Image (cartoon, rainbow, N blue to C red):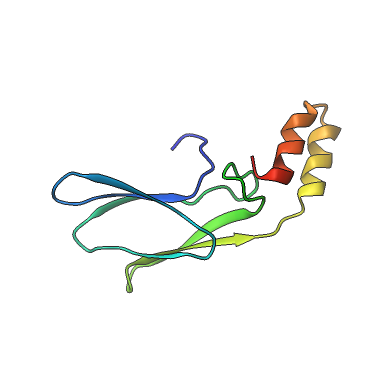
Length: 99
């Protein structure tokens, strides 16, 4: 995924068709047993999907689902660390907007 920082699920069935589902906050996605998946958990601290919250997933191997979880983190503190290191201000400012 590189550094996409955008939560979502890519799936492929036996027909080789690839589908994408964007991982919305607190959404649970049911997985099919005979599909293959690539799951992007998003970003714990620098989201790029317009939602200024950290992101992770919970994978349930018994129920075969993935839940996207969003949480608040101290954006101001991260911003101050970025500025304190002499990095360009836009790198910290974008965090307030989730970009």
